Image 1 (spheres, rainbow over the protein chains, first blue to last red):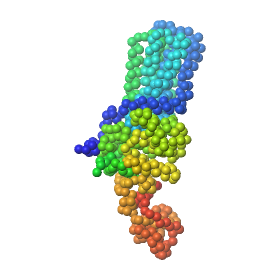
Image 2 (image 1 turned 120 degrees about the vertical axis):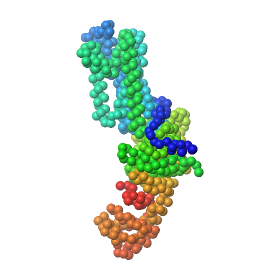
Image 3 (image 1 turned 30 degrees about the vertical axis):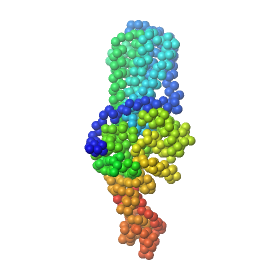
Image 4 (image 1 turned 180 degrees about the vertical axis):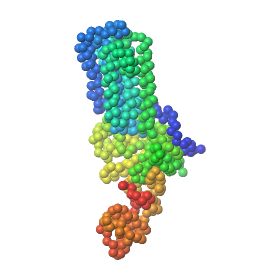
Length: 275
Length: 308
């Protein structure tokens, strides 16, 4: 039996292994992103760094003078030190979401970038991982810059704060993964606006600017179900040094987010471009 | 005989109940230039996507370079050069960068890619545009860059979907010249087109496709011989009179075809036929004798024009 006969023997059933999904070359996708950023939109990218810093200065320092201290697990911390880790988590979220939603949406619907990529030996998982890694890098950049500002302002209260950097990467990974998965299902600009509609209240109400305990119990449950709350609590625990086993729950929450996002993104990219 | 590089047997692609491709069977030999000719919606692009291993077949057999695209998609794609119908160049990158980055998608080493990028820019006559933005290129230049990009992995088969659609005549001729060079280098070309002149210029052999099925197969010359006459006499009597005159012309030539704007008389000798018609007292507003083309073949096979 020749190779040709062998190939013809098999009837199309859509049955495919991981080999069709992943070529182990997401680096090439990142290389592309790096070159594109370098030549076109690094200024836009840099602007995202300053947003949380402005919040920290106005609310943390300005409003903080009126508020005084807030209790974290029974320990009193200055208001600026209370909201700074929350803003750090938000910065990671925003960086990751920007890259994995609007940028990805544009690439799928208008630039036909992925169509070109998937006509090569790249698989959809290469594309998904490469794009998410880029979003993650951006998140890391924002987080690093912000951590520096926190250190200068004396808002890192414990050596545990060093671990806030990997924690922030985890948060960025989670949001990038979910963000890309959701975006791949959306087809219009109106739908893309829903993302903002969810992001803003999540930013404001996830125990970012005041403790969760101000809410009645049912609202507390709702907030605790949302991803940003887990991110805020995780980072806050580390930078204030109030560390306990509950931090592992937050980590697990993000691990699940990453896995679910990757599965759906890969599935969807395959359906869109390798029907 | 060498093993064919592409074998399709009863290839079917359905979207729901609709069969975009409805049982195509063909083979492509190495080094051959093979064309799929047909109107829009005939199933050409769908067939190309299946050959390109980016669309799975609903039924039938398909072998690309001896491999099954369902199971070896990335292996197959690494040996293909794809030039899609709509340019999907990376507009966030410069011209040369487009080639560099695309080469990296195939996992090729940076040095190899850089070397090939320069060669291909020269081949595409874009050497002086390496640092230009993609959006600043003309339509013809973009197409040439897309072709150069498709060659970065030194593919064994090049898939061209409507390579010159939307280009002006001069740009088309430059492109045909480039494609002809690839053919001379021994590359296998598979192209779709709805331009018969393009098929005649570039294809050794072609299949005429309509409604997802093959209507005829052969070299351009064979098809014209088989399905048309040597010459065609085109007569215009004015839109309102064509039908009426057509009845009077019954029996002229081998066959006549009445189109909304003109009447086609298929005959071995167009001039002689025109004289006979004039002698019979019918005087067209304009008349034209031309050689038969694949357009006539298509009209004969389907009763419709290629471009509607």
